[in-house]
Image (cartoon, rainbow, N blue to C red; front, side):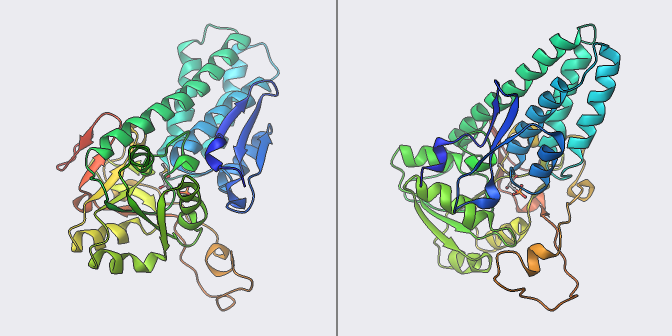
Length: 346
Ligand code: MRU
């Protein structure tokens, strides 16, 4: 199979005015590129995690909003903006926790507001440019996060990551994995551990896949093996991504992140959150104010199994994210620098 890194996670087919994504639900078995033009299909792709990871969702939504804008048939700017706002709100409803979704969509709408005297054709051109800028800036942010994170690591380190904050979650490099890519290029010889990340297995299906495809030394473990690794001294640092950072430094990330952080504190392993500044939400005071997405029970009881692995009608708890308290976080690594407690991100 081709190296997944040869493909763009999210891109715009400018000729056909379509969103192109890798269908991540099929990985690691099949690399299938989807071409989406219909707003409902783009909404579904985000909700069903065909495209996922906070920065990638933001880029996909921005491109989706541009595509939707080109399908509005009116020359009246006011009417255009009203219809576009409805489409923006619809896309924003696909997933609630990652702030990058609303951040990117708000940025797209602001371009229109700042140019409300322009005609519809000009607004569409501006929207296209903004969507492409969001993607290109994401690549640069990830690279800088990687450089900053690498400054905290040493050759031969054992690194643990949770979920997928890799290239498949961003435009390039990933956030938590960026230092791994840069370190790999520079001969750091990291020993990388990915946990599976139940229930959707982003660690096993995506992170283990993309990093091992690059020739890195990657070991997969179940989520409940993390303490065992740390107790043996095999992990020198944990690097994770995030979906939203509150002003006080509390972080929402994939369910299970707070377990890893708690165990890391027990064994004095530094716990680093890698976050583009677009993931910092100064409008959210603490983790208690972050809406946590609840997902279907079948993801826990049936998905990936040949047969259902739970009694019929059992009650299921399936939040997609959890909150890691700021006290557990050694540093938040952004493209602008490394933030440490006390966090005041206003
Ligand atoms: O539900 P997902 O797969 O979208 O969750 C992804 C994560 O939690 C990532 O860690 C986060 O979005 C950061 S991606 C750079």
